[in-house]
Image (tube, rainbow, N blue to C red; front, side):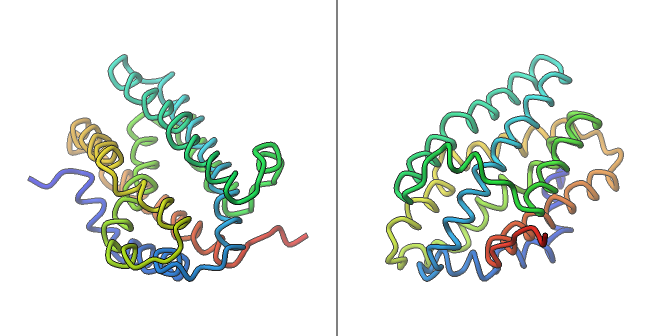
Length: 219
């Protein structure tokens, strides 16, 4: 029987195809992306991850023990493993953490973070899980889809960044998140979850677009 996560992914395929084939993604995996755009992306994504960590902390405060424990594990992963990877990446890009933290999030980044935080704060734990799933899952799918491009990528910096998302540890995280969502779903409120999932999927595409165009505030 098809689980909730698989159904959500299948029905959002038109959005996800555009995510996977976005010019930023393709150029990054080929190694031809201008470094300026990658630096911009890294700065914005670091700030986004802080928002994600906060959303999971809110989720944990509202959930039962077992789900709260898992949510805090994911928040801890963000705060340690992924953030530590980004700290090393920032150093290689000649950026200081304090400098990055002072950068104002772009309009798209701020909107996406606020959407996740609002969903976590005002919604049920399941809604927060569904809202964050496209971020985790799409990075895995991008990595798996573009393995061949990555093998031929001459840019070691880009390769080391991308390889994180095809590790067994990362695959296990996505699998566990999907299993939790599928296990919690009782066959109700599908349209509500589909809307949440699709909005986050659109924000994922918008995030790549934002970075590709070096989005800034108009005034």
